[in-house]
Amino acid sequence: MVVALTTRRRFGWPKVLSPRFLRLIALVVVVFWAAPKTWRSSITEKSIENLDRLVSRQGRPNGLFYDAKKGHLLLPARLPRHPVRELIEHGKKEWADKVARQSRTLEQAVAEYMKRYGRNPPRGFDLWWNYAKENHVILKDEYDQINRDIEPYLALHSQTIRERTAKLAESKQTGTVAFLPDQDPPYAIEPFKARTKDLVDMLEPIIPSLPAAFNITISVHDGGYGRLAYDHEQHLRNLARTSQIVELGARRDGWKGSMNSSLAPTAKLCPPDSPMRSFTPDETNRPDYEQYRMPPLHSFIYKHKAAMDVCYSPELYWVHGAVRGKPDLQEAKPMFTWSKVFSHSDLTIVPLEQYRDDYGIDEPQWHEKKHGTLAWRGSLTGSSFVVGNEWSWKLSPRWRLHQVANAVSGSRSVLREKPNGSVDTVDKKVADLNRDYFNASVAGKPLQCDDETRELIQQTIAFAPKMDNSALFEHKYLLDVDGNGWSGRFHKLMRSNSLVFKASVFTEWWVERSQPWVHYVPVNPDYSDVYDIMAFFEGIKGGTRNEDLAEEMAKAGQEWARLHWRREDMIAFMWRMLLEVNRLYNRSDQESFDYGQDNDEAW
Image (cartoon, rainbow, N blue to C red; front, side, top):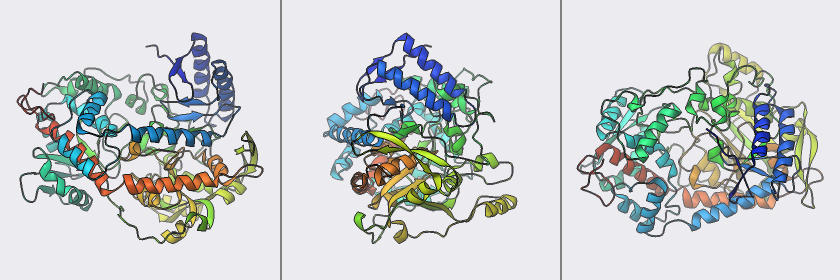
């Protein structure tokens, strides 16, 4: 299959590239991915120089290259302006456009749903709309995450959905919620789980408005449950998009294909045209986990959700265990999970742990904060810290963060915005950069480890004391980093008036309902962009200081959390998800459970 590569003029319509340009780009890509485990730093620089020249020939006005599938802004050798300034301006425009285009009437919302997803909304959509409108939910159309989760299951018969939900409930690693809109109380939880009970308590007022009774099964674990092979999942999506249903009892959901046995396990989760599909992880391209060094700056994230996808960012494979995996499901199973990555076939649920309407923190105003450094304290989680798994846990997010933020050797080239607006680089000692920009350490004690590894960890790093809220919020910049799953602290950080940096691969419910570079700073999971972002905001010798933009973003993030992350917003998300699952569970030849079509054929 031939795939046409395109450039984009700033953020406008794509311009198709010439065949000669395609050949040159292909050469750059091949050389890049063939590079050894040194993070391809020298090759990256050469590739970007070539890319800069090629893009300039195509008439690009600013020389920046936006990779839409990867979600990154790549850096050419010559920068006409600082990329962070570019990203902030773009983010503001994109957010304003998103808010302005939201539906204002039920009729508009129905039309938008049908336009986006090619089907009717589920029954009960009007009651959901009334709730969203009466409770001032601002983004009434931004639920693409729900569609991404639900769509493969639309190809399954309701009997299949019910049977597989019941089968999942047999595991001790799950809990089941029965939604019973005509009963009092209108739900049942079996077995009892505090995490699930918190969610159901929040939803209880709206359960009587659900169209019919149904069950959902929820994993007890923090992370994802299962993965379908990409081709298997696409088989289901294609059936759903053409209103076809898998025959009852069909093996492997009627998918008769097979995956190339030579592909790496994670590659089988990815589209054929994606970089990960042809990537073979081995020791030749694995970073040196014994002496890990932050890779050179290669890009900034501009579409955070796209940047979470290992299929288009294979470098994530080595630095985050959650994205590694294999197709471990032979059939689609409707399991709800508290957090997931792109490759998981699970259904998204809203976690409430650590959430508070008011955290009761007496926080200083921005100009009163004592520290202009990026602060983080957290437990050493995010991997299994055991013998035989060294390369994995030594490349896990929190271990790497502690290592790079406390490094004292080496030097690094950092972008500098000069007073006239131009950009150059300045070399700085890593020890000085960490002193000026970082205050990040793991805290507490070794966790999730065997005795031998516990001793090794204690000999290797010094755990810092935990930092209470009053000390944490004395910092103008706060970092949130993945552990085992979703972040329970992110909402609290966003409710502060500090600017939050976020490094994550988990596609949480709020991701599409926020705007990176307006409400928070998206950070590469390898942390390669942190020094350059901090130098832009806090300044570096001979350069400008843009603390005013940081303060503006901090206030915008706090306002976003106040207006877009309320209980009402979480209820609206879950209500809409439950309407979709209700339809999957109850539709029949007699009733489609579509909105406004109560007695037509479902298929």
